[in-house]
Amino acid sequence: MRRKKHLDERLSAAGDILHVLESREFYKLSKEEKTSLFDLSRLFGNENPVEAEIGCGRGKFIAKTAARFPEKNFIAVEKLSNVIVGAAEKAKAAGLKNVVFLNLSAENADCFLPAHSLDRIYLNFPCPYPKNTYANRRLTSPRFLALYRELLGPEGEIWFKTDAARLFEYSLESFTANGFAVKNVSLDLHKSGFAENIATEYEEKFVLYGKPIFRLEAYIAP
Image (cartoon, rainbow, N blue to C red; front, side, top):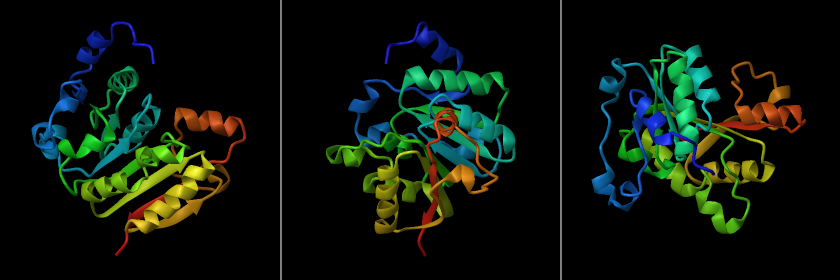
């Protein structure tokens, strides 16, 4: 992706809502050196429940969700600086006080988020990595599910959406094989009558093209 003009200045201007910036030096550090856990009650200034979107993209979903649920706090994680800057600017322009952004790879989320601190994780249209050789990069692969288990509270859940049928099949198997149970499985979300859905930018395009959206909710099996 081509670097946006004035990216550094824009990232700096979003500093009150963008709390972690990726750097090449950061990814060279050991896990212990990277770790700097947030005090979430201090970060948000309250004790409200916290939810996170992994891979927030351009930020439409997290901005709409944070606006709809002011009684909750939200964390948006996105690896690409070029992308997260627009998401942070969108939330800041909307005056949202209950969302913060972390510009880092998902596998490093536990360097900043305390164990069992999240009530819900949103995975919206992650890259399907269709080649099996890249399966461990999928956000529903076992290594990421282990991370989510660590971050979720005892009644926490994962809300997952994708337009990729093969990724959805893989994810169903991965969840159930790694200590999660699934519920509210839909093979065509927009014909299911699910009233709580908040669409992403990609989702709106896929629906216009007539593509079905696959969705499920996963929770740690008792």
